[in-house]
Length: 198
Ligand SMILES: C[S@@+](CC[C@H](N)C(=O)[O-])C[C@H]1O[C@@H](n2cnc3c(N)ncnc32)[C@H](O)[C@@H]1O
Image 1: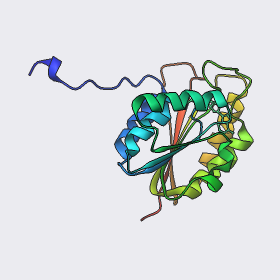
Image 2: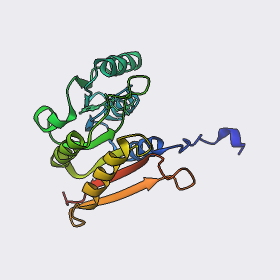
Image 3: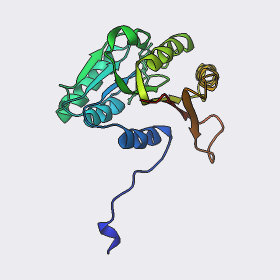
Image 4: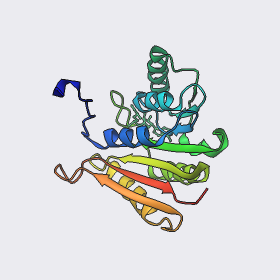
């Protein structure tokens, strides 16, 4: 067979590409999903595509600009119907999202292309992570991309790592994935799977 007929594999440049690979493998059509930080909407778009018309996505952001960019991206792809955009903090997740949820993703830090002064913060991130665990079905995934390379991002990344490392290994399977042949402060991804049996 000619190599031009082979499928093109996604390039795993950075942790977000890795989270997308995992989501593509795990998420089934009809799933209920949460994007805790929709930003420019790239992650929300993938979740909306994977959930399909019978599923649903709740996407949070505290910045109007983020919601507008996400809404435009979804509209262009014809995927707006299965997404609820929420202009509020992800620390209200438990109140606003309907269970059961198959996956929750966090992409921490600031909105690319906007003020770096508006960023996720350890206290609200931790509150939202605790709520995300309460929403997750057995086998469900929580994916968190951390950015230790920017001011404040290092402390937040440590807070999230400490929280995740403290979860019971009987109830949760916790993984850390980061590219080894780059700077020690490069972004990395944490995966928490709800290990309870169905
Ligand atoms: C790195 S960006 C997200 C990137 C996005 N997932 C994408 O695909 O483009 C982080 C986002 O988190 C948002 N954010 C900060 N604090 C938040 C909070 N408490 N709740 C929800 N979003 C928040 C910021 O406004 C910013 O847009």
